Length: 106
Image (tube, rainbow, N blue to C red; front, side, top):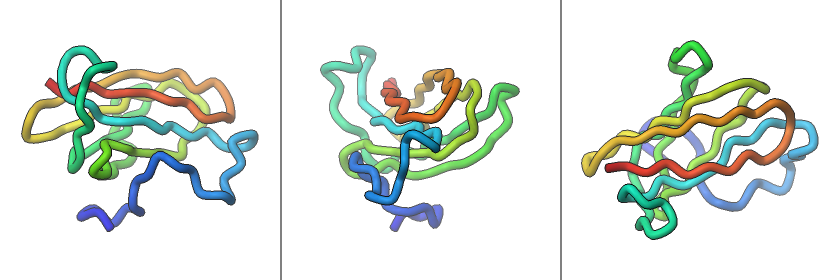
């Protein structure tokens, strides 16, 4: 269990999640400027911000850097804060489905 009270973050979705009906923002926090070669960053505070920049939710990334949010359709920013650096990425989730993203912290 994370320190913020959120459920444990994993790369695998729970079996009862229907991505045909829900917007799922799922991804990993990685170190460095190049995501494909970055190492996973565990223990990052990962924040979900709405299209106006307002804070909506927060989870702590797993040891493998995994995080997940359930959201409404729309434009979102995912920001990762870690002692080794910070980073963010944006995603437009127009409808239900699994929306995969990576956040580099530098």
